[in-house]
Length: 323
Image (cartoon, rainbow, N blue to C red):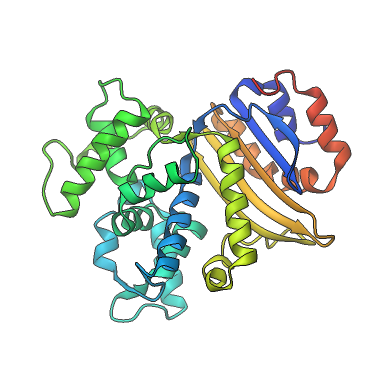
């Protein structure tokens, strides 16, 4: 099919899910209801919770956040993009008295995928409130959202325990709440990161929250509608991962990846007014596969959006559809 991702999906369908919706009609559905590790894709749910609380007036985009609060959640080894975001804030003169606006923290979570920003937002919004929103929005197949910093450390501390995403999430949340109060947790320290090798990173990847492309098709559609219909949140939404390289399209995209996962969730509209939601999750990748997939993703996305023949080829060649 002259695209590595398409060929990978055909050859490894059991480890892949894909959903393409055009103008409300499902065009391609591959393993749509299979739950897979989300990686940073679940930050979109936190974005929705943030928008919801802004609309309610619980928080305000201009609220000031001191960097000391963010650094409580920062683990350099698993969050190298935090420094890139911090330097960008300095270059843009957005740091005043070592504080930055809350909406900039959210931008850092989406555009730079900063894990420290994600965990700070979970603390500010309330993990329980975010998880209740999952239920309220009908995301019944979604594992509970978890703080990233403690999930890494707990997965290392409990390396011999056969955790599930739910059990790791429960322990991670309890440790996170203690950490925010300034309490030390026995056996939970940064020295554990010495053991965070490729094998442990893959194990942690499997224990991150899971959900389906079906659920995230609904998530990106909701974001698309917010962007389109609610002017009061336009400022919040217009920086959402802009599709800068996709000429003729307007929308947003979020990537999520670990050493063995590559996920994409995007919404867009074309110059003819057609609306699309495209979500795909690729799991159990080798190092080489993931590297090639990263390079091939933009070409694949554009082919899916612009070439009906390519879409039909993919759909007809996949062996297992809607398992």
